[in-house]
Length: 146
Image 1 (cartoon, rainbow, N blue to C red):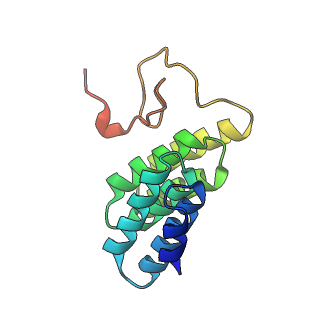
Image 2 (cartoon, rainbow, N blue to C red):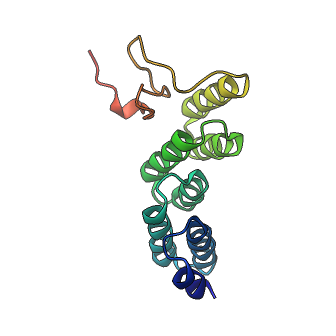
């Protein structure tokens, strides 16, 4: 059924939803590599689907947290006001014992929820948990000691 939907509209935005649903089904069946291929195919169709990025991030959060972080960052780049994505990102960090990162993510999401913009320009030295002017998340590992 999923394959028929893809064949009918291989490059339409609807195909992204099909790839996502297919990937979730494969993940639930324990077919993680197949799920990843589905998510990659969906991103190939629409590289701005925040929902697809966050769904994939949730899949990767235990086995590959660094990659999950980059997926969450992409999701938030395309939908910075989506509190559900923020909360999933925060939960991943807390579950991994990264309480400081979880707190920073919560602060950023609270800032966005109160009407702040994540598209601000950095005028100071970036700190872990900040966004750069390009929308890229600054991870603690990205910072270089003076």
